[in-house]
Image (cartoon, rainbow, N blue to C red):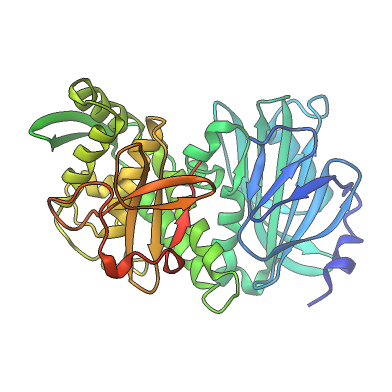
Length: 385
């Protein structure tokens, strides 16, 4: 394969940026912390020029990505920016989708064409950035011969883009445009603490959430032998959290509105959620990921420890109640975590102590853990936005 440096020489339109790279995040100079990309692990910055563009390459898959920020005066729409960029690269686009994403216009298209003489295939995406009306364009591709086995990583990369503070709590750009909501309600009836909660989700939420989970599990599997496998696992759960929050937003508010008025405090509310999940039907998923989507759980499907813990975290975080999940490869287990002034066992992460919540044993309260599982070094914390 031609080196990435040689490939970039053919990208005449490519001017590049100043960026800051953190553990898993690329953020853009001149923007707030709400505008960033939650990178798959082992994507490295290969080239940057100027103040508005950069090129990244995966170290474990033949995938390359360009991200370019156009100033607001350059184009009148995301679609125009995407078309202009792909035309300069002589790429043939198809399956183009234009829709509202994060309350602004976004556009995405599949493409084929030669990049630096090599037959390539991938996706181009563009979205307005509400903060200053700039437009972000992502071009992510691999050699055409690798596309069938690498497209999931390209899709995940595009879904990593966050353009505002609420992007961390919403399905990503790729998923939203290629796997949109149906616009039809599915009624949900829940019984929590002997109270009926009536709510709804979109009728496509179950299948769209399952698509995201299985795709991200494919990404996770790429890192099984990587020294960054823990970081990859954390991102896997972050991506599920990000996709699930908006889908369950109304459910979360309806649960809180029904239960909270009779709760003594936030921990009392969280206990009702914990007791509720402890009563779920335990069932392993017959999928590669073995993770039950949250819309399917509240629709009556089975679940296990990590999906239950994630469900609690989504509801609590949606109500601005500080929570977390902990996962362990050694124990093959997951527990929820809650910041609380109540006494009990907890793990401390970045200065905050989270009481542990066991979702698979009925009758347990927050702050109780099996003594054989109390070694923090054997748990991986998944911090949530």
